[in-house]
Image (cartoon, rainbow, N blue to C red; front, side, top):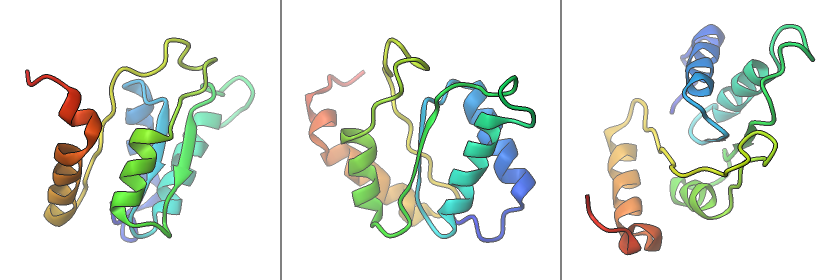
Length: 122
C-alpha cells in the first residue's frame, strides 16, 4: 500500500484487524511501508506490555525491494514463530491497497509462481 497519506491511527486499526483475523507474519511493501510495519509492531506489543503483548507476530519491511522481490520473500522465506502459530500457516494473503497496477502484478506473480502451479484449481 501507499501509506504516505494514511494516518497512524488508521494504520494501527488496519493492523489490529489483521491480528484479529489471525495474521502471523506481515510483509509490508510500498511507499512508506515502514510505517505499516511499525503500526503492526505497535499493535503486537500493545499499550501495556507484557500484559498487552499478543505473541510473536513476525514483521518485515521491504521498502528497497521490487514488488516481485517482496512477494517472493513472502511466499518462499517466511515462517511464523512456532510459539505463536504452532501448526504453521496454511494460507497466505497478498493485499493491494490503492493501486490496480499492484493488484494485477500480484495476480500475475501468483499465477506464475510454482506453488500456484502445483495447486489444484478449486
